[in-house]
Image 1 (cartoon, rainbow, N blue to C red):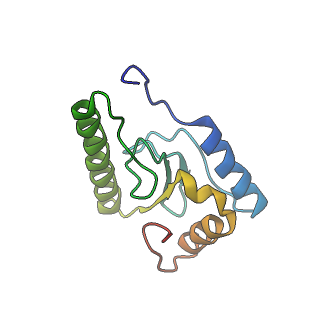
Image 2 (cartoon, rainbow, N blue to C red):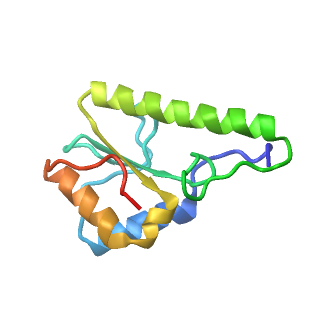
Image 3 (cartoon, one colour):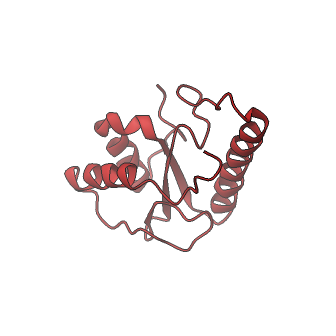
Length: 131
């Protein structure tokens, strides 16, 4: 698995696209060059949306490190979480709103859509959906 290079997860991004379209949330773009390369950007609202894989970003519910080469994986996953915090802080310092959606949260499209909609309307929100 150490040779697997993370270059986006097409299935999760396609699932979020379907959710955005189903709930008529428009104005988003992909492949933005802003800090952290968010999966989706609502530029006029200054909203960055990331879809985090449960494995790669250390989901507290579903994340687990492989038992072989465990030191490598613990370092890798810790570094990923540290980078996520750095990206969040960097974007917020630039007055962007940041939403991170766990991969497993895509199974509840209503919650995901409501959270993004609230951010677009400038209503306060949690940084993650509570499971």
